[in-house]
Amino acid sequence: MVLNKLIHSHALVFNLFLENKISAFYTSNAVNNLSQKLFKINNNVTTNNFKSVYLVKDIPNYISFSLKNLDQNIKLKKILQYKGYLVNLIDYEDALAYINKNLSKRNRKNLKSKTSKFYSNNKISSKVYFGFIDKNEYHLVFKSFYKLLKNRFDEKKIHNRYLSKWSDLQASTYQKILDKKASLFVIYDNEKPIAITLNYHVSDMVFSHIQTYHTAYSKYNMGDICMVNHLEWLIKNNIAVFDLAIGKTYYKEKWCNHEYNFMYHVFYNKKSILSKLNANIIAVELKIIQFLRNKNIIGKLFMIDKLLYKYKNRT
Image 1 (cartoon, rainbow, N blue to C red):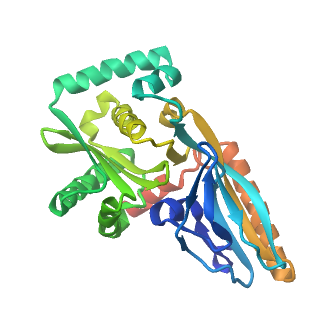
Image 2: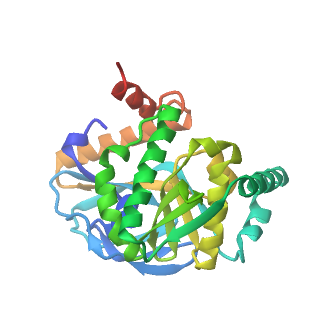
């Protein structure tokens, strides 16, 4: 954004699910509107004292957040942005019930065929690490996780922003698994990890953060295999929402039964001409960017991650 260097900002959805934090503009109480479950957010990620503009990005509108009683000079602009996708599991007894209700006859037939071949042709087992994982096993899983993710994105020729910060992710996730704030879903073939998903847990919601698989198993539609494993565990553990977050893909459209919107909140000081000007510029810029997304100019014709991959791997 043009004003990136002039404003403070953070992405609410990532601070909420990854760190259980929220901006000090909001109270610590929030509600999952789909299940009507109230939950508490423990920590503030920022102060609400600012001189010009503060931008809170990526606010999922299926969750209600309440504003604190702010200084009367602080005002707010709300800007509609891109769509998010989630699996609403309320009232489903098991994975099969969800599949029968939400997948087409053709997709159900294909899933059954691929799943049968996957389990028949390989020695498959799976584990969900949630609440406990041996530390040595954890590091082995993360080593495989990195390798699988790198190979997958090298194949796609797309830059992955998590790989460069992998050591930080690995260092921070272990305790979160022990505290039941994160989980690792791992599928093995002959005890070798071939598909791994890192999720974060808040209240009755699970946020799918990173998922990858061994490219040699692509013929089995590993994304579908992983989803079925998730559905079985999530429903059994009374999870209401499995959030696949930002980004429209065929996979998300096939599996998700609920679309929602992300909002941006622009806080500014109405007494400051500069603050009001910056807030207006940011609002216009965000609307233009979203217009370009809606026209598939950003996201399809212009993919930043593909350009970054070419730049970082140029000879």
